[in-house]
Length: 104
Image (cartoon, rainbow, N blue to C red; front, side, top):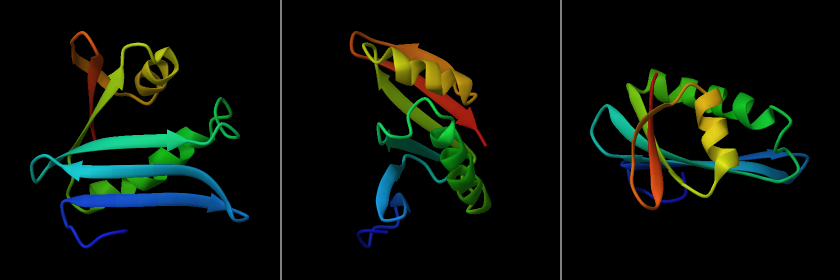
């Protein structure tokens, strides 16, 4: 955790002092949290990001989080494909974003 705020969780994943990914969670309700993820270009397309997310999401499930939500810019086709591959279901769209949820 970077700050003392129980409604926000931050993770940074390193290997050999190289930042691979950051994942953040923001509480929407007690059981539903919004998830954001940024993967370094050095790991994109190599199935490493999904492994990292599976590990970190497993920790969230143990903490009682039941559902993750995410929003992806409509112009970000790579991220939309990633979310679908990870099992997120599309819940809506607007002019800027596509919205997803994942039951843990």
